[in-house]
Length: 505
Image (cartoon, rainbow, N blue to C red; front, side):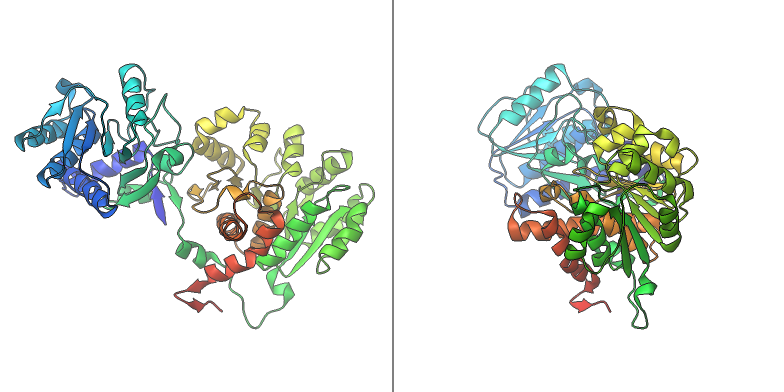
């Protein structure tokens, strides 16, 4: 697991390292600068004419240390003091002095020129205010240059907490961030502005990050591999759970198909589909492995019987928002006590009828909203959620006591007893109709195999992303369909189950 701190968490880790571990700030700064210079050389950047633009804080101190090291290596270096020299932090002032002692000259203004690399060391991870005035003009001029652009720790103007642009921001080709990747570098638009991100270990202690459950995380492939359900030789279909898929209104059999088949592909033992009668024939042809129970109108007794039968429920994909669908959703919330994935129209109906949720949600529920569905649930504009999605997600899921998968270009999963988890794989090929139905079925299939809600959610999202990468590699970003995505679930699970070339049995 990799930690993804925000500004506060990283500052606390710095303080702990300096005051408790006894590593001076200037030593950390030297390590940070050395890591940046090493990365630039390893990437074979043209260092013949480098312009390092520095602020007056410690990020600027990193910049002056980088400029000194490059100069001592014989590179062509121009340093610019973008901040107020009189307001420099002690560390920045010392690094500026060392650069000048090495023969460096510090300019007062950024001058356009034919630079090979521009190094952004203006603002660091602690920035929380909007950039305006001369600083905004400076970043605009830096962005306009044709030089390769390199950011120190985080591009200036990107919030380390949200990934949002604080007025304006430096657009980097590459960023070297220190010790841990900031959460703002994993969320859009920060991820786009950071370019290629490399995380350099400079010896900052992780104890405060471990203790603070508000520090988000990102799971590695090994972490996700450890979450895979075990397949025992001495087992049968009952061993791996029964999934009830409640999906598909008239003419919407595709959603039910994607839910059900994905649950099977995830490893569920038996899947039953509860759907509109018009979908029966198509689903029996598309997925003969599934048991079909169809309805013409609301039948409470039949639904209650199915809820008693099921180990896991997957509800909402394509069921519509008419009166029958509303009664089905209401009945599930009133009577279901098993793990339940609520997707698509299940969320929309809940947003339209808030009383469905009242005192009904419990810790066995997983909600899978995309941004617009989340906006409907919270009755807030999408922009308000995007402004601080981590806080919104913690407050909502924490208050309801549920697991929530907030789907976006950077999907985040949260449950009250665990860290918010940013998914590390996937691509734009997943932005296609049916993709969310596949994810809901995947998560339900993992729940059926005794993964808890958080485990099933983060593993399902990761496998979904892996399948998306596999499908994109085969068909390109434009032409991937939900069917292609499902077809790639099997190779994704096979790949994840393998360790150093040995398949997990």
